Image (cartoon, each protein chain N blue to C red):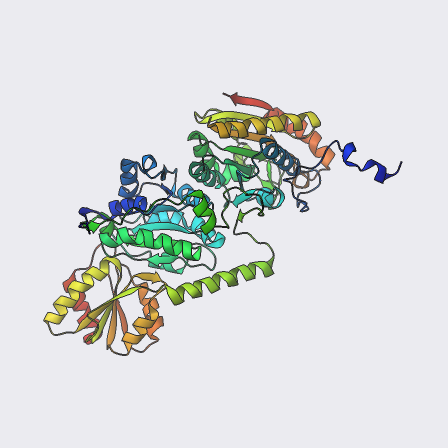
Length: 361
Length: 253
């Protein structure tokens, strides 16, 4: 076996490399800090000359997401990436894709808001990613990487889940992971699917009506209420199936923990340092890191709530995931939040202090 | 001679294109949409592109175009059809890709997507139904509503002080480097229908030849929205729409 090649790159660059390597057919994006390296890396690598992957700089995030809609509707593997304000602009298209059940990938490298906010890292789009964002009853499969390696690995995973369930998937990263450089082993090259393979995998796709079948129509429109209710019920059944099968999380030093920190993405890395510092002081703390933010790992958190005295939700926002943790533990133990806003990343020492003040007292 | 004696294959002089479904259309009697649908179906058939065409339908009266023409379709959000078509054509270069859009969709909410797709020279055809009104939502003012024309949201007539001026998207499109064929047609008479069909054929052929973007505006009637009989609506269109939206080719490279 050959030794795996380890390279050093930014999270955003890793996404671009991973997209080409996983057989992505089309990337459609619009520049926005702190994720512009995705489009920059793709245009530098020129995958249209190698794998045949299409790369288009759209006129807006609105156009970009609708290009993803158009491409995904033909069964092609299509993606976009942006940062918070741009992802807000994409919500119309995301809702339409959820409604039309299009497998696609949206990457949000979050920055601080609301509004134009700041270009510094944030996790304040948790609600938007996991609770809807666009209109209607729908869910996205949301993966939260905590390192550059996961930025690379989750591209293929997100596409796999998106096509398995015919549903848009999102990678919810933040400016810190997008911008920082780390060691990464890039995934192996997978060829793009052939027309025949797409046809077999996506018999619903609008790729030209072959004789012998009816026309394929990609739409989210149904004016008859009874029919529309049935479509919604079918979507809800699909979401229940995803909740049953696709929950992913990491437990870290939970075996003997008296207190639990829940954190995802960058905050989970800080949490590991917090745990080290707290344990040096004799406070036994563990971490549960949700890897899928939707479906949310409610059951493992519920299970740990029987063991620990309190849970701290460490988020780089004003307290969003804490609502899902409280729903999971249903009042069994105190659940408190600590976070910094405006693009400030919490310091491990202030988190240890917050842990003591809010839960240990 | 009875009716049965006449209905024989050898007496057939004209038939509905095969690609046009038997689904009853929701369009009002006198509306131009039905005729344009038929022309598109005929051209796709004549080009033998039944299995290689992907249409993009809009939001507006044309939203259900996918129910009437038996090809593969994607139904876009309001105004976004050219963005969908851009990706479809880039990913499937050997497919015939067209959008079908009304004036509200193309010239108002989707102005950005329309201009940029045309300016990039995407090898697609945009069919633009301009009836100067929002038909589906019940006759509100459109970007193409003529000055003085009354609609549900300009009930005293379009006033430039309040509403600005009608937008000539086709003239704009002709200025863009990416367009190869920009034309304005109508379907109110037999000769007009024949010319419109030729234009659609040329645009579709250009798209397949990779010559660039094509825009066909069809100046159309909305007799329900205009509150006129079909016959009067055609006359009103000739007298009021054609002077402001003159019929003919604006660009043909």
